[in-house]
Each structure stands twice: as C-alpha cells, then as structure tokens.
Length: 375
Image 1: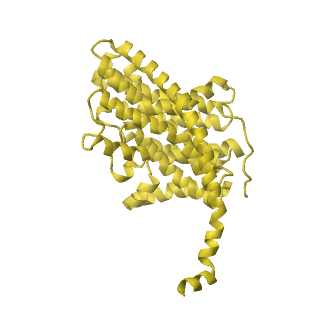
Image 2 (image 1 turned 180 degrees about the vertical axis):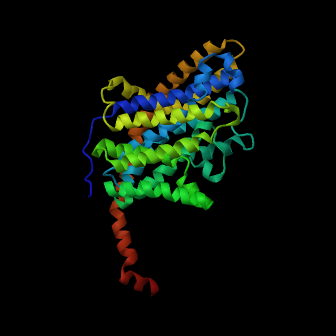
Image 3 (image 1 turned 90 degrees about the horizontal axis):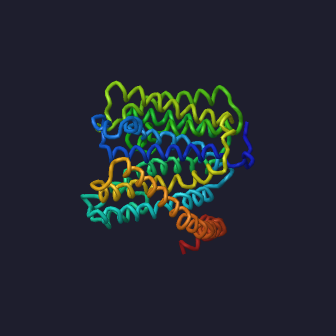
C-alpha cells in the first residue's frame, strides 16, 4: 500500500529527554575520563562514577537511534530542498560557534587544535563540517558523529527525492543494510564509506521504530529492528579504544547498553513513554546539541587552568556548570537568532531555484535552442 504523509503530531517530549540523557552520558564520559584519568586503573580517583562513565560513549548509540526516528519523521512529506534547508538551519549555526570556540580554547591554553596543521588550515575545513572527507582531523573528537550523520542525511535525501512511502521506506532500510554488508564482504571501500555498515543498524532501527510509532507494529518492522539490534551489538563490541579496554567486562556491558537503548526506543515507538511529557524536557532538548558541541572545549580549558587549584569533584562540578551555561547562551543568543535569520533567506533562494529551474530545463532541451547553438 502507499502511505499518505502522517498528520502533524504534538512534539515528542520523551525524545527531548532521551537526547538530553544521551548528551549527559557523553559529557560525563569525557569530563570524568579527563579529570580522573582514562582507563580502569584510574577508576579509584573518582570511585563508582568513573566505572559508570567509562561506558558513557554509549550516548552516541542512543543519539543515532533517535536520529533515525526523528529524521524520517521530519522528512516525511517534504521535498529535498525543504529537507536540506531544515537540516542546514538546524545544525550549522551552533556548529560554527562550537568550532570557533574550539580554536579559541586551544589558543587559551597555548596549544594548536591539530598538531600537523596550521590552525587556520584546520579551522576553515572544520567550519564546513566536511573536514573528514578531505582528510583534515576534527578539531574536537565528537565531530566524527556529525560526519556520520551527514552520510545519513545524504542517503535519506535520495529516499525523499524518490518519494517517501511506507513500502519505499522498508525497501530502503533493508537495502541499506544488505548492500552495506555485501560491500563489506567484498571489501569494496567506496560503498562501505557511503553506507557505513557499523552505524547503519542504528539509523535503520530508528526508522523502523518511527514506522511502528506512526503506523502501528507488525512482524516485519520488529524483525528489521531485531536484526539491527543484533548487528549493532556485534559491531559495537569491536569499537573499544585501547584506553577503555576492560577485559571480561566491556563486552557484557556494551551488549547490555546497546540492548537497553533499543528497548528505550521500542517503548517510545509503542507510545508507552508518552506519560513522560513535561514541558521542561523541550528546554533540555534545545540545549542538547550546543552542549554536545561545546562541552569538550569548555572542559579542556577549565581542566588545564584549574586542575592544580581544585579537587576533582569540584572541578567536575564547575565544568558541568560552565558547559551548561555556555550551551544556554549559544542556544539563546546565537543559535535561535541565526536560525530565524538564515531560514527565510535559504527558503527564498530555494524558491528562486524552483521558479527558474523549469525554464532552464526547457531551454536546455529545446530542439530550437540546440539548432541555434549549432548555428
């Protein structure tokens, strides 16, 4: 069957809460790891908390699941141009601030963002968010996830261009998984770079959960989500950094953590999370993206300047307050105003393109214009 675009629905505040929790996991992972020292031997420096935040990088898994859900929801019924405008307005204003704050934070402590590059040469590609594609290192570690997200946006744009329906979504999801696995089996790096098999299960599962949420559960969608869960658990266990290695513990906790994130999204998909709907979650959700972008810069500066003057717990508290305060200021003073200013201008440019494109195509393909060009 062909599915009509879903009707507008109230904001899913439970997703705002989950996005905020995911950001907190990442923030604590970085802050405690830096302050206490990375790795199991340093857990005693901040007892209990360090053992938990050791696995805070699982916040990224939850982010990617939510992204699959939300991006499909926001893309439904839109054209490629409208989707591109909405994503550009959403991700770039705060990102530009984050990159600029990053280079300033390095200068504040007398370091350069990328040792092998002139700071300006590193800064400018990072401002485009395309630095990974041209081989320039990220100025902040967390930016690698944005490059993965851009892959997803490009792929979903193809689906939008084709026209989103229920059947096409399912075909797209299954095809993405299978083609990624086949490319990996054949060691065909161009296709694996596009389809990113280790992270595809999260986005595909998020899309499946949205379809369950919007159109109701069925065995096919649950099987797709279950297959994605199995693949995600396998891939995630192989991504441990040497400094995070924890023999006989890492595999079990990671498997449990990935499983828990999938269960959370299954609860959202089946409307069982809707009781958790507080207006404040929307505010927390608005802080999530700027907090994610700026927390490493803030934490680095405070750690370098204050670590010899403050205890670990005090430094952690001050770092959290500073990061949340900065995120709030970025959101209110920069992100919101820039979004209001940029969005209508991009839409105007898109509208101009839509007006002129048909005439350009007609002129290009007209037999008369071809003859005149030959003459």
